[in-house]
Image (tube, rainbow, N blue to C red; front, side, top):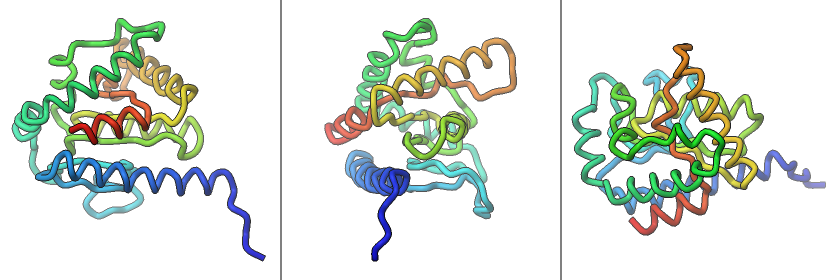
Length: 194
């Protein structure tokens, strides 16, 4: 008798399918840039946290800060569209004061290891999601949290606010102000529009 798929297994296979579709859409929208699903920031690949989808160039040995600045300008239309969607999502939150201008947003995380670091929700507990969000914020010049539902969108917003409050009070934590929070539909539609 075949094994029945659990809810977790179904969610993970849905994530993997979305990762593949997103990577393909990003490859069309950003044809000159490397796109990697399940990217590990450590070159020796030892049990390091992975970013669900990452867009290079990747800063393995040397900083790509100047390249990232050029790429942010080159792909500004897409990034501004993503920022506008994020702003709309975050506007209703209790701490919308943490919403900065686009220019301030794109100048965050000057020591990034990749241009975009995308964390897709529904991979385990909220603790795992928090770790994924922190990893994406630390590694990406721009981090994107992808929510599957209104509830998970709210969870991402609350996590961002919590990390912002830690950062603003001087606690050791990544600066989450490079994090865009989008639904899977918003992200895919915006990427496909170019």
